[in-house]
Length: 446
Ligand SMILES: Nc1nc2c(c(=O)[nH]1)N[C@H]1C(S)=C(S)[C@@H](COP(=O)(O)O)O[C@H]1N2
Ligand SMILES: [Mo]
Image (tube, helix red, strand yellow):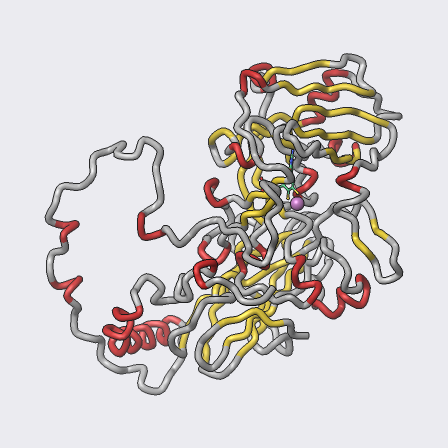
């Protein structure tokens, strides 16, 4: 990928400490504000910086004078019957990568990880990956057929499915192609494009095993499930029955407290915790129980890993432990030396995150970050750690370890095993370079 249109990049100052100020405003308040930040955070971090005792700046206009919002009548309730983000948050949105070709409606919109907090992805910012565009299916016309090795082949309406016992679970979903550009040393500029085919939501639905049990599936022979989507892409994936029997696979209709959004599979999608996104079949119309893997186009032509010896690795569906620093990250800018809260997310398709280490010197020295609780299995885990930038060039990295003891590899360790011709399953450590100017950019460092 070469030159990027400027408009495709999130604002350089987004979520930098002074990210809400316009450049002119920044210059205006710079001296005073910086002095204040320096002393406040030096105290908070228990640090002693030269000049830290400097007096606080005199008050600004905005704090001294009553502002329009304090002297007028506010908007009435339900001005927007369905709530919208502030108009000042317009920069925070899903984006298509300028480096990827859009094939008609088959494309990707990435989540803006650089501007998100905690572990839950706001539904309107959930990434989108469609093989043939999205549909808004009338739920009264949607059906789920369950057939194959079951005693009682059945077609369900949505009403029938929603009468069954339901569960709600928080899980991440990551496309197997997330971070795929980095295999070929193509450093895309921002975390939105390097890692934004990743989201985490609370999903509500019926456990697939409950439905299969009820219909009397063949426990001996029926070791695989085929999931088929109702969109034009003919999306079909094989799910091993052990995953279904673990009770984790859901026929989900809810996401973050409301019905699924159309682009995420309304009214029904499969949720397969820990497994790459493609198996989370959207607009789910059919589940077939079978006695062997189906080897569909989506698991023979696509979503296979080309290994250095020229062979294709198949059915590598579990997303291994991975993490990324989201602030500061590529495209952002540190405006001054001093304290920064380094924040990021970690996840593993094999269970809970156990530890995240952070380095500011390209992996020579590591410190363990604070994991925000609750730490959930197969969900995003937020980590935070304080860092004092001394103004010299630095390389920020994070390294996740999951409860199995697996440690996220460096990109060269991964390449040694996998070669460079893969598209999928790149879970390497991400490096963000902080230049002396404060500019943060994507680099590959070992
Ligand atoms: N029916 C159907 N299901 C689908 C797809 C699709 O194109 N059609 N895309 C898959 C892929 S490749 C991914 S990564 C996830 C993306 O889910 P999302 O759009 O809700 O983020 O859905 C999967 N399920
Ligand atoms: Mo995907």
